[in-house]
Length: 126
Image 1: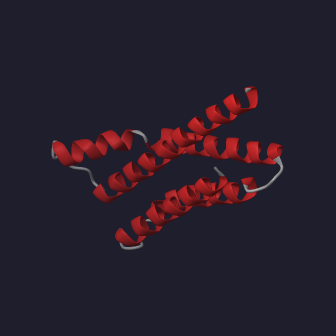
Image 2 (image 1 turned 30 degrees about the horizontal axis):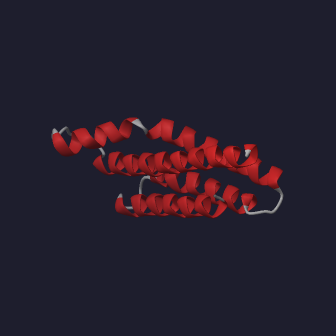
Image 3 (image 1 turned 30 degrees about the vertical axis):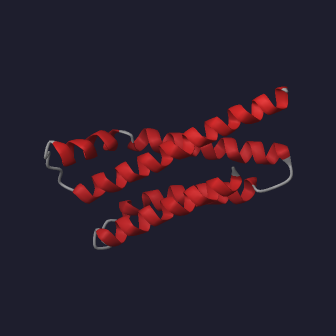
């Protein structure tokens, strides 16, 4: 899971950088996904160890960061769907798109982590 965390961190960094460049490089808040991605990538590097306790701690911190990030951006998925289907207007449609992409990436990351945690627990119990 550590390498997967690094991968998702890099994806979020790309989302943030593309969002920042896509807005004309004038909205520094577009870099928020990149900051979340950087945190995830660092935690992934720290979790890439043979020490099981350190790996578990860093992965649990990473999934907590991912869950909090998802909860902070979850509404944007609904806003993005409304923007595309119902034609609802937003003052900053690029921000809605970037937040929705961030929410989708983080949701997928959290679901994969939870699945991995359940499999690890079952593996220890067996």
